[in-house]
Every structure is written in structure tokens, then in C-alpha cells.
Amino acid sequence: MQQTKQFPEGFLWGGAIAANQVEGAWNEDGKGLSVADVDTYKPKASNKDYNAHVATNLEAIKKAMEDSTDTWYPKRRGIDFYHRYKEDLALFAEMGFKTLRISIAWSRLFPTGEELEANSEGISFYHNLFKEMKRLDIEPIVTLSHYEMPLALSVKYNGWIDRQVIDYFVRFANVCFDKFGQYVKYWLTFNEIDSIHRHPFKTAGVIEEKSVSGEEIQDVYQALHHQFVASALVTKDAHEKIPEVMVGCMLTKLMTYPLTCAPEDVELTLKKNLENNFYADVQVKGEYPKMVERHLENEGVHIVMKPEDRRILKENTVDFLTFSYYMSMAESGNPQAERTPGNTVLGVKNPYLPETDWGWQIDPQGLKISLIDLYDRYQVPMMIVENGMGAVDTISSDGKIHDDYRMDYFQAHFKQMKEAIDEGVDLIGYTSWAPIDLVSAGTSQMSKRYGFIYVDADDEGNGSYDRMKKDSFEWYQNIIQTNGAAL
Ligand code: BGP
Image 1 (spheres, rainbow, N blue to C red):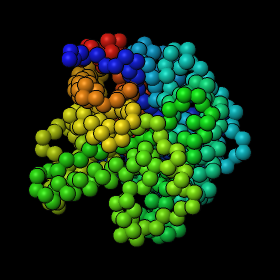
Image 2: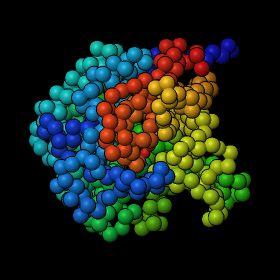
Image 3: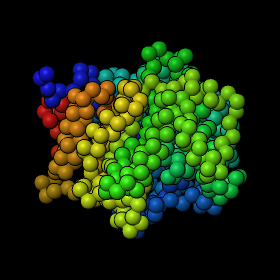
Image 4: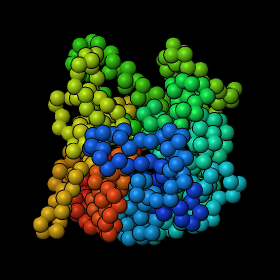
């Protein structure tokens, strides 16, 4: 069979952003505070000091709630997408985007989460955004919950630990389906739902010291279960309300290799990968895997479920699977093995791989392995909804940004994607993280740059916020225009 470099017809090329990292306007037009709005930035934190910015104890949160500045809370100003979205969408359209993944800020629609009616100014903003996307022929992919929820729900209920939050989320999601369903076919429920284990506050509003059970692991699994049920319930609603809708789950793909072929390393690795699959097992297959249930039992975790929960999960599985892929990990039984930071995790360093400025190990082939592995296991259409390289970009003396390293990164990953497709994987889309520089989720830095478009702002929020094309802009434009043939 003749192999071409072209991707399947209609392949959805594009980019991905999240409301809390781009919008800004944190207190405008009736928006309430979200958990992301209290994410602080410490100027002295080193590039690799991932957790340096996290201040999630109750006292710090309450202080931040009263603080009306945005200097220490960079996500409050984002990249001012709220006011500049037309300019940004025009640039994405110029690159030829077929799709753009965005998220909706829950607290823009429901400032405290408990209102009975949605905030009309919040609705208008997203309505205008979707209208503009339609005009530019950019298909939206919308994440309902991307690392933010109304802060008031976190403080009052301790986030997703309380079952009550399911009802508020279902109300929010239904408003989104009713108001924006005419524009949006692709919906994702929770961004990186598995990340609740790594940062329970950011993902699920869980404040450790407010714990009821006193056991972090118990709290996290309980909150996760509520998110699973909420995800299934809104999947049901979307299926009933929006014709031809596609609802997906979204995972952090943390492909793990054994550091050596010592059986101990292999077994540890197998367990890591099974653990990573658990979240898709529940959302795609509709049930908790037996081994996970046994593991929880052994750990003394008891998830409180309602009698109907298992049926709800089973009857309302997702239509497609999406994931983020930034790097792979290694695993070893040797406690002395060198460690390296990754996407909110610390893993064993793989000696075969280079790394980014932030120490994330670059592994394009791991993307192909991940695609084959996931497709073999779940057999549903897939999308890569985040992949990219956080780097320090500098403006050269000619006034331009020559980000060859970024083009190399993408080129290598795209080739592996194509090979996976040639092997039979049903990959329907790809959205790079992120097409435009934005505030980092992990470090709250602006200087960790991902975009094809540069934003003139620094870590302290100084700058004009003007946009400028990097060299990679034209490069990606060409890939999209030729549907991959230019690779
Ligand atoms: C993913 C998140 C994104 C994003 C990305 C890069 O886990 O879904 O929101 O930010 O990671 O991480 P960072 O911003 O920490 O570099």
C-alpha cells in the first residue's frame, strides 16, 4: 500500500487553551472567583520547582479572596483573551485552524456555583466567542471543567468531596448545552481527571485541612467518584439535547517504561500503566476495574456510592477519548534512581531522552506507543488535545523569534502520529498546547512559553500584551494547509 504523509481527510488540526490561563478579566462582568484565581506565583521559584507556587491552605485562600490585586495571581489577568479574543481567533484562522479547544469558566456563568440562574454577561461572552469561531469556520472543542471551579464551592463544600457539587455542575453543564449546543459538537467533561491525585485543589477544589475523613487518599477517591458520576450524568444530558454530539473524556497520558528489564522494574511499570488506565476504564467502559477496587479495599478506602451510581456510569460512557501528551516516564525499583520532573509528576529519568528547559523529557515515539496502546485497549476515536513544548523564547536582534526547537518538537511528534494512523489508530484530531503563549498551569509563569504566537508580557505582568508571530507560526500553517504532507 502506498503510504503518504497526508493525514486522513477532515483531520482536525488546531490548538488548545483554557479559560483560567488566558481570559483574565477575573472580576469583570459579574464573574466570581475561581480556584485558579488564587493560584499564586513566587518570583524566586526555579524553573523546575513545580510546587513552589501552590498556596492552598484555608488561611492563604481567604487572604487571597480579599486581595483585589492581580500581581501575585497571574491567572487573574491571563493574556487578556477576554478582550482580545477576536484578534487571537483571527490569528488562529490565519494559521488555518480547523478547530480550537477552549474551556468555559464555570464562575463566569455561576459566580458562586449556587445561583439558580446563569450570569447573562458570562453567557454573552461565550456566545460571541462561538459566533466568531463559526464565522471563521473553526470547530470548537469545549472542556467544561479545566482546572477551575467557583472558589465559593471549594470553601463551602470542600469542592468535589461533597456530593452536592454534582448538582451544581449538572446545572452549569446544562446551561452550556442549552445556550451553546447549537455551536458546539465536541464536549469534554473534565480536563485530566486523573490529576486530582497530583493537585486536588486545582482539579477538584479539595482543601486538605478541611478534610472530613482525615485521610487524603479517601477524600481524593470520593471526590473523583463524584466527578465520574457528574461526567456520566452530563454525558447523558448532552446526548439527549444535542444532535450528533460527541462527548469525550480527557486524560493525562503518562506512558511509563521500565528503566531496566529487571522483573521488579517491569512489574512496577505495569502497575503504573494500569493505574493510569483506570480513569479511562471508568469513563469509556463504564465500570471500576476489579483490580482497582481490590487495591482500594487493601488501602482501606471506602467510596460512598448511591445504589444507582454504577448503573449511571455503565449507561453513559463517552463517545471518544482524548488526552494530553508531553513526555513519557520511567519506573525503577531502585530508590537511588535519578528522578526528573514531568507534567505535575516526578519520574525516574530515562537516559535515552533529551529534556526541555523545564526538565520534561521529550519522547515523540512515546506518543505513537501511547496511541497504539490506548486504541488497542478502548477502540474508540481519539484526539490528542494537548501536546507542546514549554520553552524560554528570546527575541533575536532582527526582532524575531526563531523557535526551531519548537518546530523540531512538533515535527517529530507529528511523524509518530502519522505512523500510528498508518497502523490503524483512529485519530481524528490534534490540538497543540498552546497556540499562543499563556500563563502556565503548573508554575503560573508567563516565561514558560508554548505558543506559535508570542505575547509581550513577563512573569510580573509587565508588557504591552501585544501579539507577535514566531517562526513556528508559518511552519504550522504549512502543515495544516498541506494536511501533513509538508512534514
Ligand atoms: C496540562 C494542563 C494545561 C497546561 C499543560 C502544561 O496538564 O491541562 O492546563 O498548562 O499541562 O503545563 P504547564 O502549564 O505547567 O507547563
